[in-house]
Image (cartoon, rainbow, N blue to C red; front, top):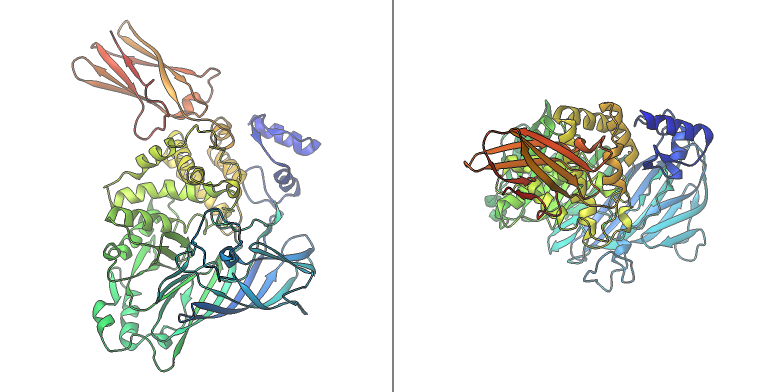
Length: 625
């Protein structure tokens, strides 16, 4: 491929260049290729590395005060070739402070002080938490300076903290009523240090979400004895926290491919204890290895369903925890199991990456490894929509450690596109692929529609949804269309396998798809991901000569899209022609001609389909006189 020559020339000469005169490669990515951490074929380079941590956490949730108290012993491993002279911690709950910078307004709790550290030790040094010049607080980040972690070495951090769990003002987590909580963004988390940007210093301001290392967690949660807990990781001590009857049904659910009601309505109204009540509190112990985050939920008076899903021979424990009044939640356990089975079989066609997943009746729609926090939909189709979407995040970003803070479309866009097919298979009330076309067209071509390669954390307002969800979902569907289902699936699976447990960037995706397909994609990638523009095709002219209908289609917009033509004849019949977006690949001019043998007299031609985004439908009709 010609572009490899240009890249090789650039790498050898050190000359800053565009990629094949089309694809721009920033300097930090050029350095990664030169240093061998990434490869031009899309694979991790021979010098690829990434850091990680072991978190041993104990925490207590006090529902009366609404506070969480935690302590952690963290071992941080520096696998990079660099000597680190600082550590960066994320103190997510500082977004709740009155003067915090946020992407949107919230009903702020004026007395919320954010995350309060009560002690901090790094290595052998203990820090004064106020007035220490080696501690720099920058919004939701804490930078600990003047330390030394040599390449291949590690350091130990001991930290204690507390914070008030937000209520209605909580972002993706919080206290939903007096006795139900979903706890995320809750522990001091070491930021990512990678081969592209070094330390990730992006502040958490509400929109942009994840970019985490793959870490190991050993977590013990102390809750009042009438509370149930659901969490990332596998429960280590069910026999210590569950009553005999609940434990029996829990064990049954762990072996059943049909839903078992672990906690029923009869249990909730019974005087019999559901959990160990020998003391005022119970300690719930969870372990999870090689994951990007840890969240948990806690509640009283919740129903609990559980069952197994078959993820291509691998058993996955699926559960749903919900209020009696959440009528559309009664199917969630089965919907989740179907999602896992379809995704493992079809697209992406990779075995579900985790041993379990729980969907919790909280608020909104939010994903984390092995956990989903979502409110019930008013209609079944919306419960299906949210369940499928959040469960599919198990692949993007949790199978791979995607930098969603900068490239949200690599996470939300893939999830949006892959979910469309599963959602429609489970509930055909709404065709979400068609809906995503319409939603994209709500924004396409507007002045503030920036290219997808523009960092997501710099985008505010409604356009974030288009940038992260709708435009990329349409782009991926068009790629699937012109590559063909089998080739697309092969390329997607290879990308996921190469970068499972690692940190892929957009160029790794593009280069892998080119490498696997053995085809150039610049003609599509450059306008759709790097450029500003919109999709629009029109019928320029059409005429019949010697029983041959010739239709000239013009690409009015910058973005290449498929061309679907329907010819309506005076006798009421219809004839169709279709060209994938690759019809524009080798065209020097923005015109293609579609020829069609006909017998009758054509009445009119209609261009487009419900799955093709086209901003102007008025130029899609041609009438014959």
